[in-house]
Length: 416
Image (tube, rainbow, N blue to C red):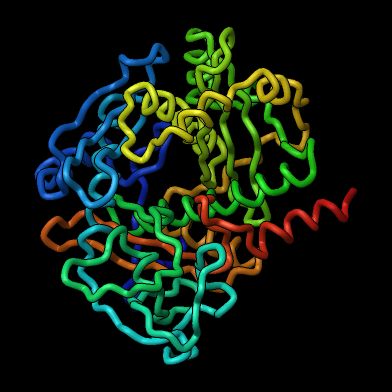
């Protein structure tokens, strides 16, 4: 039996009780009952089932949040309508917590922070060409390092989604802001596991994408028909009946947490927009399900026209994503015999899963895994922000490859 995970000295343990295409402590129906009373507080005006806008039939739901400081919609998907509704509602609640976080803020320069309680200078999550100054004051909040078991200050910008009301603005904001590592759950450990999976996924995708663009023909294509999992088989059936093609890519890197990319596009028509989805989980089948359903969710979001950060250039990029050249290249990829999924390393408890992920991060050279508890006691839905210094971040326009992505390329170059 795994030892509890310690968060600020408090032992955390959580058994899993729901295993249908995902792992949770309670069923989606129970989660939805917990979420419903708090949706208005989170700014949700309605939950819209948009599944019928596409022909695939995989449930997809939007949580509309008009007049919110960030995105006006959150999206969710799942094998059932209830699961998709929970996914959308939980994302909305997560974003609300990041917009309205209630944390003590320290204004100090990086150099003024205690050496044992700061992120190493070369591991700070900086934007490309950021003008960071060691002696310039920035806003920091306290996180807890699950590996080192001590407090560590992290940039406030990397925790929240918007500057808190009334806070004196800092002109220089060099840190990357986004939703990477923002996660909620029925239990604090469930939320921490979800946040860890997301940062590991984004790191793997960044490393793998740089590898593919630097050294062609290095994508590892998976033959999904060899995957012995009923949920994956059901998704393949639905895609086939909808006349959609799927290319599944293994993006797993040295963190050894299975990660996959799913590329879904029309079998007969070009320039209707191919979509990608990603997923990571200690159970490879769950990671695949997440990747495939996210790609289908992306189709529906584009069809619904719901993204308020979707601009003209994004439309052009979307229409070119399934060009003849792109599709032909993807379909020409041979199935990689080494991309056969490994046995699941997931357990029946979240403390054991988190411990496994932390062990694999340490083995990959990572020595900090930072958690900020954003839970609003009035809502009492566990929400956290997970930051892992050293992992690659989300590939926004301002992203530039870091040491891990560059090392991943060099590792493969040396093997050629």
